[in-house]
Image (tube, rainbow, N blue to C red):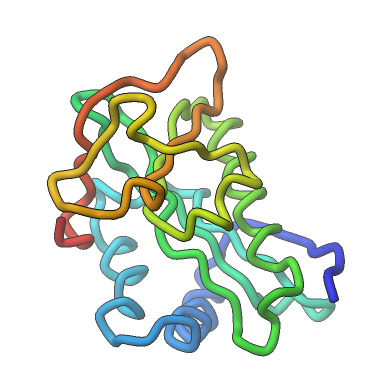
Length: 170
């Protein structure tokens, strides 16, 4: 059952709850530790681009994170882990967190976002196949899994290879 979720920027008090959300949503400890690793990387972390969807008591139940990456030599954002507590999945909390993160990025003047993820989920936000724009990776992934989005139609997506922050390991 989908509902309307309130969203807000992550606060310091949310960090342990976000850790729990990510650990519950991802199958390996390495994946679960990614948000903390990105938070510790000053080249990757952008204040205000870690967003949470909260329940009626203001407790985070969903999380979306945008971090710095580059497409060729142009700065862009990477939509990094999107995670929702298992008991809240398929209820719109993840969608709300992603939309809030993209809106926050637009307000900060960010122009481009890439995501490596499920091709049936991200087109709802406007993401299209990155390869159609000349965007690729240094590792092989299914073509439909790497997607890109421009937040500013006046600045089309640049072509090039995506360079992620070091914690991603690619």
